[in-house]
Image (cartoon, rainbow, N blue to C red; front, side, top):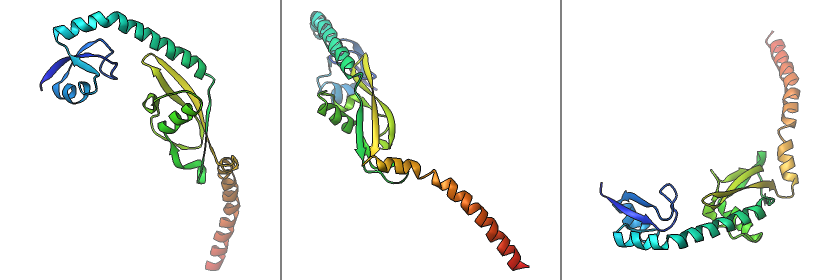
Length: 188
């Protein structure tokens, strides 16, 4: 496989930080990194240019981190609540995705890209969840998310629905014995 050396102009997940020189496959550089201006070829001229820009990069990095930390402080007391249609056993008819969470944050005044909201999988049940939002490479905030059913009563009904089931099973238990006894006496 052909590899090439590139100089990262932006942080790239699982690859490196801004200003690092990394070796990647030629196709990845040609088709992804270079067209998106995430990296440039690591020629001696480009390396000198980045070294000259390094002071500005460090200042920008410090400013971005400070902004992210300030935003994290503002968001630490934030709670999100979603009201959705619920079926049996608290299962949602749809789901709550990273895009829904990003939109809810936008309504609260925080401009967060949905790709910075980390959900292992969409939320499909009512309940309490904790969602990670990555504001900066080194700053992550945990936001509590509550998903309830419409009217709130549906969620309580769904939670209470399993409780009567054991009582019904106990009621069916003696009836089942009676039925077995009736069957036994019919056989005799």
